[in-house]
Each structure stands twice: as structure tokens, then as C-alpha cells.
Amino acid sequence: MSVYGIVFDEIPPRAWEFVIGSWWFGGGVMLATAGLVGRQRPAQKAAALSTEPIQDQRLRR
Image (cartoon, rainbow, N blue to C red):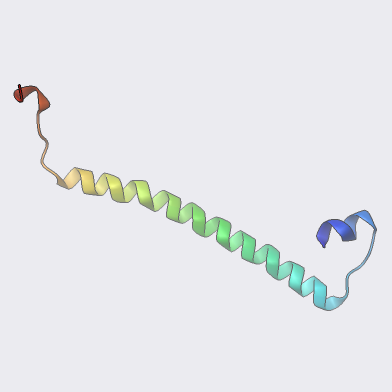
């Protein structure tokens, strides 16, 4: 709808402005949430690895 409005120089009705704005806002929220989740996963793995005892593989033969 946004591209259609730009290409054909149309002004959408007021209700469509709200719908399109809501879609843009929802997309931004999903993008920010995905970024936060993506940053949390490596941090949780690093925290789990740091609590395990360090085993020296050279002692196993």
C-alpha cells in the first residue's frame, strides 16, 4: 500500500494511514525484539560454559 501510494501519488484514507502506520510500528518492534533475543542467546551460552570446570584435554591419552 505504501509503494502504491508513492508510485501513483495517491493519498490513502485516514483509516489506511492508521493501518499502514501500525504495520510499520509492528515491524520495528519485531525487528528490535529479534535483535535483543539474538544478543541474549550467545550471552547465555557463554554464562553456561563459564560455570563448568575446565578440563585439560592434554591429560587424556
